[in-house]
Image 1 (cartoon, rainbow, N blue to C red):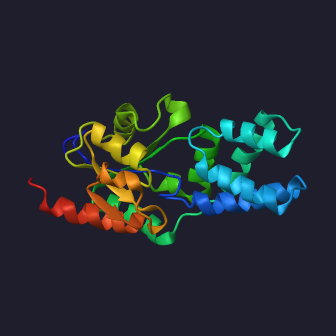
Image 2 (cartoon, helix red, strand yellow):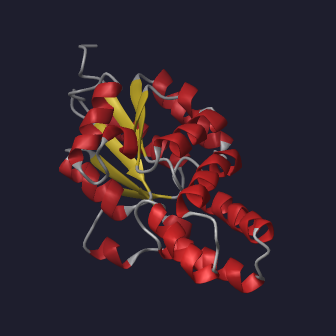
Length: 228
């Protein structure tokens, strides 16, 4: 295979490869106990987390003020980043799917928004760091999805600067689907909780699937029909 012309499959991390939502629920329950808060506070944490987008510093500013916490935002956020990697998991069938893609000659990478310590911790905790050719984390890259430059950097780190075929798989329509299209990649949307978001009317992915394993099947099948 000509260097740089490898087939490329990129994946989002949170709520694509790892179950961040389940981990966040566990973290929130622990947080309530550790800070002697009530059930109403737990509901507030979960609802605020669901609505929040972007770096989590803003989330901790909100809950610190609303819940009357005295710990500095930086300490709350740092504790969160230490704990979350210990709580995430990756489905064995999804990990097997990544291995299958690599065995079939695909370069496999991860593109994720987030803080380096937390996201790298998740990769190492789950063993995903051993299953992929490279990754880009927004904080260390100085780029955030949907900027096409972060996908291009990920491709370079996977030694696939000019992929003959390229896909991005993720659960966020704006970050993963729109970003993939801007970078010239095919887009596969992991449907969050089986619910079609209203944006899907105007943002149409190439495929909609339920799991990474299903996405890998789509990628392998589609590649067999690509012109050589």
